[in-house]
Image 1 (spheres, helix red, strand yellow):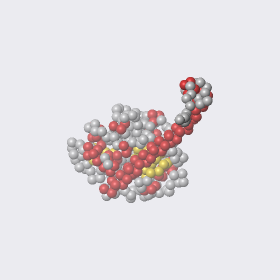
Image 2 (cartoon, rainbow, N blue to C red; image 1 turned 135 degrees about the vertical axis):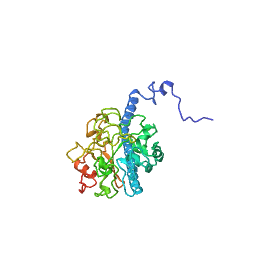
Image 3 (cartoon, helix red, strand yellow; image 1 turned 90 degrees about the horizontal axis):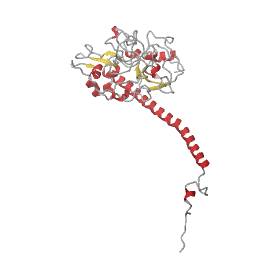
Image 4 (cartoon, rainbow, N blue to C red; image 1 turned 30 degrees about the horizontal axis):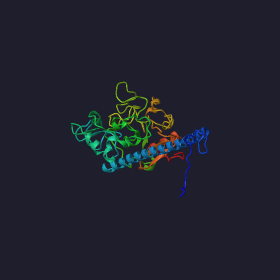
Length: 333
C-alpha cells in the first residue's frame, strides 16, 4: 500500500540554508530578518522604560500617601499636635533620650504609623527615653522602604541596609511657629488642621528629593551650613541621624532658606535629569528634586498626592508650601 509523504527530504546543504535550494534562507534574507528584529527592539525599549518609570512613580506616590496618612494618624493620637520636624514630642520633659521624652526627626515620630513599630521600640536609650540617633549608634538595621523612592538615582547599591531618605518634609508645616527654626520653637508643635488655614488640600507635607547630593556623606568636620546645630544641608538624608531634613540657619520650608520669597531661590525643585553629585551649593542642596521627567511628586496635607510639573512658578510653589499665606493656588498648580 502506498504511503503518503507530507515532507520531502532535501539535501543537508539546502536545509541549512547554504545550498541555494527552494526552501533555504539567503544571506540577504537573514540580514533583513535581523534588521527587523533590531528595529522592533528599538521600538520596544522606550516602552519598557516608560512602564518602569510609571511603576517607580506609582511606588513613590504610595510612599508619599503612607507618610501623609501617618502624620494625620499621629495628630489624632496626640490631640491634634503635628510631629515636629526635629525636636521633642508633645509632653516630653527633656531631650537626647532622657526618660519620658523622645527626641528625633519627623521620620522617627511616624514610624509606629507606617508599620515600623520594631524600629520605634529599638530607639529606646539606656536612660529610658527614645532617640533617633540611638538606632545609628547601636548599628541597628534601619532601612525603611517607605522612605526610599525607586526612581531616586542617588541611592547607592546596597542602600536598603541603612537609613537613606528620598523625601523632604515641609518645614513651614512641621516647625512651630510655622517655618521658624530657633530655640523658641523647641518642644512646640503646630496643630492639625488649625495651623493649615489655607486648607489641607492646598498645603504640601512632603516632596521627593535625592537621598544623597554632591556634598558627600554625613558626619566629619567642616560641614557646610549646619545652622544652629539643626541640620546638614546637602548631605545624606539619613532619617535616623540627629542631623536631618536640611534645616538651615534661619529655617525654611522644604529645606529652603528663610526668610523665603519667590525671588530668593533659583527654582522650586531641581529639574529632571539633574545629576545628584552636581548639587553642591545652597540652597540647591536643600531643594526637593524631580526624580523623573514627569516632575516632582508631593504629598498634600489631606493625604492626596499630585505631580508638580517643571512649569510651576516659584510663587505658586511658595503658596502651596506656606500653610497660612491666604492666597489661592494659581492656574499653573
